Length: 488
Length: 120
Image 1 (cartoon, rainbow over the protein chains, first blue to last red):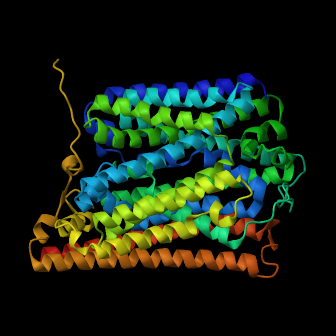
Image 2 (image 1 turned 180 degrees about the horizontal axis):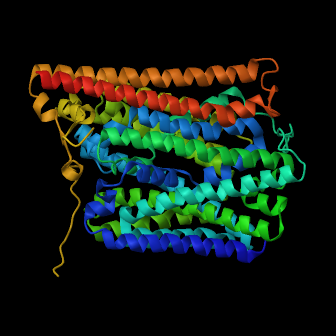
Image 3 (image 1 turned 90 degrees about the vertical axis):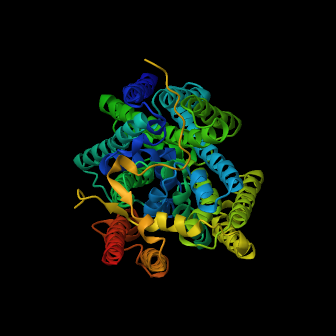
């Protein structure tokens, strides 16, 4: 692939993002425009935006790479990413929309009537967001290095620059346009090359047959513990992701929040067919990428490898554009929600403060990305899900469904989850990838129940701290909005 | 044009677009209202747990069959191994169906609550 292809694709996506972003500037006028697009986004549009934001480097590059590496074990990743949205629909979507809060710290503060809880939640949310941005930047670095031969830092820096510009210019309003556009770009960028490759293979008389049982790395299959722990992380991690939650506030009411989630599930299901197919194709025709440690670049290299020529170059350009759409959309979604949190806590919630916070939210993880090296993308994102599931998920679930939750219980649970899961992540990194034992590599199966248990036990022990407002808040969360004539 | 300083309303967002109104003010003052709300929450939680458990059982059974069923994973349907087919494609409609059923039932719970409150 010629370097110009990658560079051109990146510039085109950045330009499209910026143009839509600046167009959005003209329509966002008030602070609530900046935060949640004034809650006037219709379900289909909103669902595309959620899909666009959620499908990150891990989904776009990582899933196919992991399937190339470990076959059917890796199929649990897309299943978990999608089923996580089912859990979000069942337990969180409508009540959270009805809470009327803008961010997760807003929610915990309102529910538990405690500014301390708010501060702890803010810290956790910022940690989750930063942890999640880092793999996106690694993905960008990898893509730029593989496709253009430029040094890695160019990719991550470029993504941060584009995101800062867009967010500072337009806030959430334009972000919603951008994200919706990027879902469809990502889907096209994965689907077209895969379909093309399948057609070409069929035309060559190589029928798209079953993946050969090759195991390119010779690694043993993951045990049941690892698959279960991964599923726990993905199922319960999704509903705590800050950039996913902030999207639900853009629905007009609880019922439409549910409808939106249902559409999102459909969009995700369709999307994940293609990384799965690419991974299978990679196992059949490009197993050497796994041996050379370039599994995450499979999606980028497959069209050039299997088709070549001008068609291959064009398809490669499309894939690179899709990959950058993935990095840009997830990063900007995270940056928007993080700056919402940072600016409300630090800068009193003004538009200027929001812009300042946006730059903070994007630049810090850039530093992390420079200092760390890329692991398997899907794997490192899996750990972020484990962290979210151990910290935000218990507070959110118990806060929505259990009257007995207290501020001390919430704080104890978040701190426990953060220490256990964070500790396992650090210990796992220190022992080196591949050497860590299964329970350190996949901590969710024990750290999530532990966080839940501590939250419940401490809440019961501090029963007298249940806020007086609990009945009012609970009915606000669960009572349906009264439809005014127009509905149905 | 004058510059206007805008600040965020802290977690006190008004219902969107004025199209919908929260109906809890009417209910939470009375004992009966509180009981209605409690039973609504309980039925929504029960529903969510039933759907979640149902889905997880299906997932667990599928995984167990693929791992322990002799020769099941290697079976080929239209030339594609069954484990790839089940995990790569087959599970997604199950997720979508669970979500759709849940949405209908949750909306029904809410409609029942509304009827109760309005009859009062």
